[in-house]
Length: 171
Image (cartoon, rainbow, N blue to C red; front, side, top):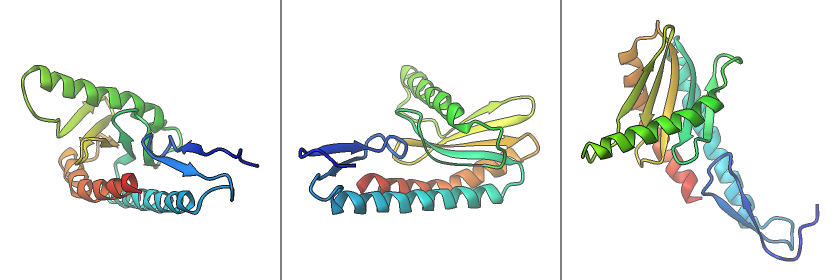
């Protein structure tokens, strides 16, 4: 494809809605935009690797995802089952996070929720807000998985995930 002579903005919604790359028409895509794209891709691979490691450490963990609170888009996700639509669930769970934030604000508490637990007959949905207040970590586990261990694991990985997300945003 030939790009027009004018400058164009490319937005990568799937990784982060706030990342905007400037592409120059002279050579197709500017070196800066290509480097940024490569760095974002490497960071996403690192995030996926972290989620895969966390998922492998818990037998009852079915799916995990890093989700933007603002738009409910997944930055990255891992699932042990193909029948789980964590992308749709993530969009709705972002609304749950926003609602919990608003409820705390209305009660006069100047705090963000640390985690949110949703319990069903056969599973737990656990949402943990990541440092920086822009993303959350979502996990879906069976009821057989120990909830305290799951919360501990989520907390243990939270800083590493947040640091990689911060790098991704700076690119």
